[in-house]
Image 1 (cartoon, rainbow, N blue to C red):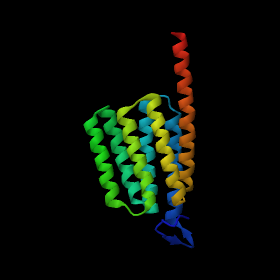
Image 2: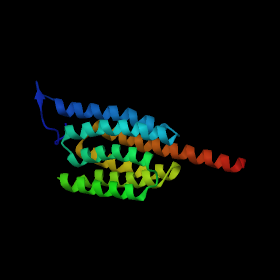
Image 3: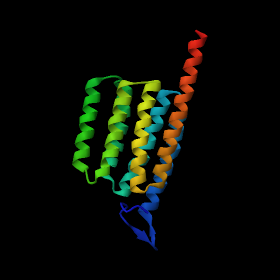
Image 4: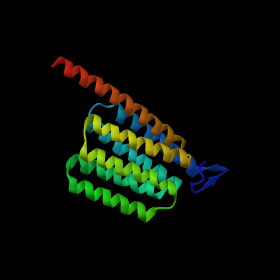
Length: 184
């Protein structure tokens, strides 16, 4: 199990580590549903549920910057839906993300959850459709690196699939857009 799990053991089994892995698998299901959707609203709702599961997972791994970023991602998604393209709200989310990261920073690799949160904030507030999903691919890549570093099997699978599914959906949207353009 991860060297970052709290180490609660029962009969030699790392309960927190297994629970963290399970939370990552739950997040995986939501990630697949999110990035399979061609509807932005549905994608965002599934991302909220995925980030709650990821927050639980990171807490069990003791990765506090990632916990903070996961909580802020849920808030950010709701704010981005309510205040689309609002640069003040986006700036506030960026500032709060930086403050939370600085307050909870422990390791050099805490940079990856912070980078994911910053890219995700830009994606959610500034873009829609293909452009949003391109930045979200960068978000998934950052979380994937983080998952690999902390030893999260469920998180690594979830983020690899998020990245792959997101890239496939980007291809589908591009193909759909090209067909629409040729029909016009």
